[in-house]
Image: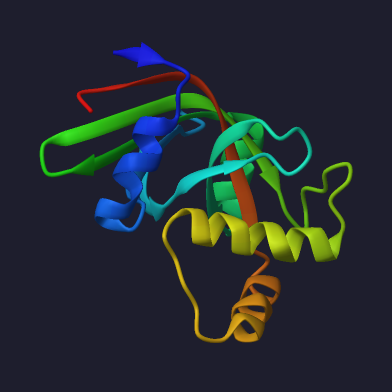
Length: 148
């Protein structure tokens, strides 16, 4: 089944706290995959549903800036949902219209909670996100598929 309906992602996220694999394309054309926690949220400026996760690091962010094509795979047992799309970065080095430092702080929390995350000390979370230069990666879905 393939559509742009992200409800299957919303349903599978709680099973594994949003744990999923994200694949992007390296400069040499080979795939690079990593594990992240992701979830569905509304885009902070357009309101459109996107899949979001939080990341950092110059190599990872540079890869996404140059080659934003992204594939995300969520699974719970043998059920799975894939989302292919284009990544948008919003972070300290990737500003977006309408997103100031305070809105970015809140966006990083929204992404974390969309992936099922909770925190006992949000001030400590905010400090870590700022100090590490964390950014939100929002994947605009082009295709949603799986056996959900």
